[in-house]
Image (cartoon, rainbow, N blue to C red; front, side, top):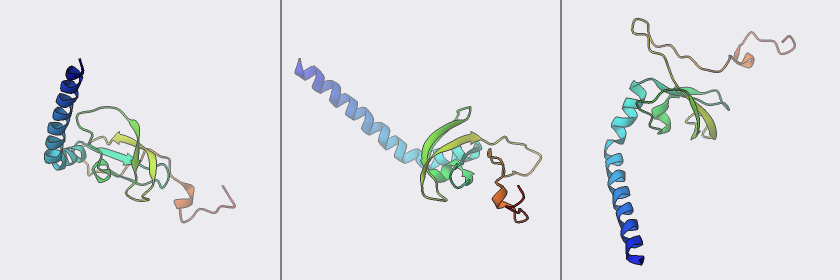
Length: 115
């Protein structure tokens, strides 16, 4: 009976080793494909926004918006990043859109005394 458990564990470790080797080999291509498909991240702490490949997160052939715990390349803190797909428009240049509303403190003409 113990030998069947040992065989199952051995086979599981073998499969994980093969998958790890494949992932290490194709990781740069997967990160490039993630960026080409328009996946972006948005940090809720520092409001940074950029290509998802910068974080090292791979997301391909997916849909929808999600939140996932990632380390922000800009502020170097962990946060629940918003992962979303930027809509592609073939005739217009890429615009840097963020899902967050503009922060009033970023406006140089903003007077804090008059909200």
